[in-house]
Length: 110
Length: 110
Image (tube, rainbow over all chains, first blue to last red; front, side):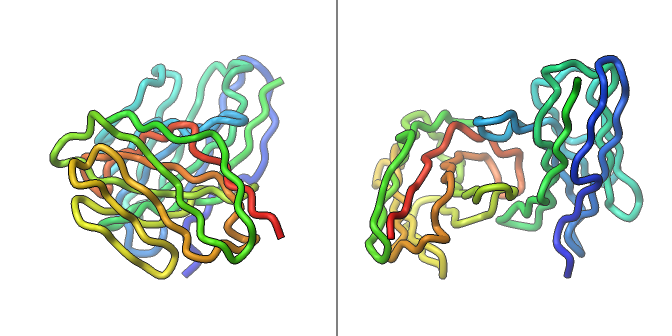
């Protein structure tokens, strides 16, 4: 089992651009959550997807959107990138009592 | 979700126990107490969780106060690999969103 995988590993964009990050959950997991982690801080919850629907959402603007596919994989889209969007973006899939996190995508906005 | 308060950092010697405190005075009766840790350059990793009773697993023990307003994560014999940021999180359900605080950075000295 490969666990939670994310792509790409690193990404550099400029202000105003759009970005798509991808996540494949652990085998058998149907719930995917996305988190943003700024340098030196704890992860902040963006949203969670279950059965292809957004189930919960954190305090993030509409520029942040997502999608879950029938195979449970997920995408995070961020439009009109700002310098402050530079962060590590983490994906987690869950089963019962645990959330399993991927290694993250490091996004740098210049 | 209830706010949690943890010390910013703690130091321990290798092979000695580490006791990590967490205060969650506004915890509700249905909130679980979760502990995750994040090793350098990795996504967070589940450590343990509990509701009312003390819990043990292969990684650690969780001691929950009788009034549930505080808890302590116990690493029985710290190794260098246990150097990480440890997050205490209160959440309504096991697979629910996780609200991370600043966590406790644990340094293990050889």
